[in-house]
Image (cartoon, rainbow, N blue to C red):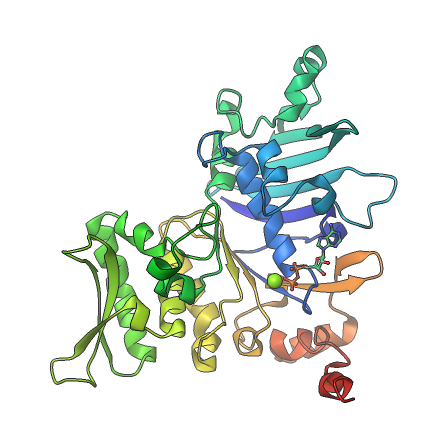
Length: 392
Ligand SMILES: Nc1ncnc2c1ncn2[C@@H]1O[C@H](COP(=O)(O)OP(=O)(O)O)[C@@H](O)[C@H]1O
Ligand SMILES: [Mg+2]
């Protein structure tokens, strides 16, 4: 399944947003604080809503998704520019692998002053032309308490659209922070829900069955061989003493037989690349990637769109990927059509999508890349005054 369109109302810094048609790869660009992460956040939110209660330590579902520590309640989620209409609304269009068209439309508000709870103002689910759920409905009228939960999160109510619930709840968000992985035993402590920063990455590899794990690591080893100098072999082993799992890489340049190094000795870029490739091969649900260019050599970054496409098409079912990026190298790939790029632009009333103008369309037609055509307009106009602004 994949997402074909997202419409948001009063969501964080989007008072109103319509992405239009979306493809297998979605590149989200825009200046700092334009809302790139906030757009991914709408999909992470739906993942949390769709998780059945009990799947996470504090349980999934609408109430938890809104009030979780990282979101902090409706007042933080709702766009500060929300006017009279205070409803927060997320509308998602999707298509299954067999061509079935789905829509999920969720709206909610605060229940009232004395209460911190969230109440559904709408929940509508369609499958092709059939309406599977259109709330508030008779059941809600008979028992208004039901409006505190979505049908998406209720296993005993979502049989007709379980596929949809499942798709949302399987979404993976990855912003691998190598230091958290390298120093995990020293940092110890908290792993945030669903592990967005890859702290549990090694456990994820360990939990994969051996045959699949070997096949994936083998492919990653071949990939690393092309971009990491002197790299020879990649292995995944359990420490006999501690029982902990480690990624180990063998480099040829230290000794004739090579020298094995554990993840805490690997470079940030190597680790991020391993995490990225593994995630692309893992499962077929939605994958949200934050700035995959970080720590990577520009030539490697330049190859990422092709790498993503290659792995997508080799998977049994394609894994749709949303990518936030600032990288000129990444977007310079001539295979990226403008339709795959969402360009966010901040206005006085919230962030909007800035469509291509006439001149830009002509430039693209003449063969220029999206980096050349679309990036200059998102670069801050006054950036060249940054150092001047700091002079006393
Ligand atoms: N409820 C809200 N209403 C309006 N703007 C918000 C709200 N919550 C956060 N923001 C704004 O969203 C911006 C951050 O967006 P983010 O998605 O992190 O940007 P980036 O494009 O850099 O990833 C900040 O400027 C913040 O002020
Ligand atoms: Mg961001």
